[in-house]
Image (cartoon, rainbow, N blue to C red; front, side, top):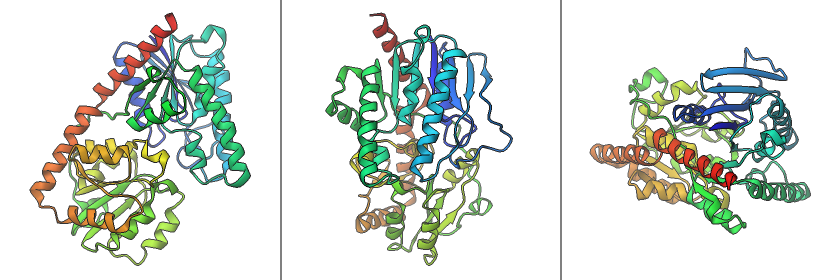
Length: 406
């Protein structure tokens, strides 16, 4: 197949390993992939050094993967207007580029975060129309209204408008891939036919075990059992509640590695806590070293109906690292961790329950900790490895193409 892969986020942007792996994995299965993306500015909202925006730029990633870049308004702050300008500018410019620059596809694959990424497939010229697969990463409009960027009357108006658009996107799509079981239920309740929905969880490449560098080399605490949270320090992550729970367990040490809009608030909150440390984000290539140096890896999200039905990419990264997981989440992610004996789950916002889970992991014997980490790695290989995930995604694309023929 020739696949038009629409994704607003792509390397060298941070956190885009899945986007690159999607393109290269499908190519390794014999397909030609045209990636339609923007110029790198995530997560800072500032164009990366060494890059200059143009109306159009083409790159050859491999002999089967071409990357088509288009202009985008760079922004990723908490201002709703600027954030929407970022999404809509990409949707508009990508639609123009797709109409004139990419070859006619056999199928469209849309990385649906944001939901507006589907616009190029929806408005495709007749010569480029093809069955569309939506790969849902975030449920809209829930993720927008739940972010707190828009409030009051504006929030209600935005919710209604986005809800209408998303429903139209679901009707337009031939197949809809979901990354967690809970999403299937939510979409079914919103009227999406069950036979249109396919479970296509995100994956990560199967990398060789990372050399465990001494913690002192990485600037990490060297004493005590080390818990590590590596990722976005945003409002949806529920990190303030997590920090408050660690304040009740002084024998455990927490490191928050990353940046985000909540960083300053967390720095103030942790200033008087000797067992909680803040570290700035590092290059993505270095993150596996930090994960390997920790005793326990932390996944944290607030408890909302939306987030219960999601599977954050941090889950896959933690399982792949072969470390026990403290799942400070509710819903699908928590159930996955506990049902596979890969760690412990704690209800977000319940400091007492979270502190109890932290204490159990902090006092767990080394051999039990090792067994739990091994179970985590086995869960990754069974469910979230690249070879398994790419085949699932290919199956959805083939099904969509057959739908189109019928």
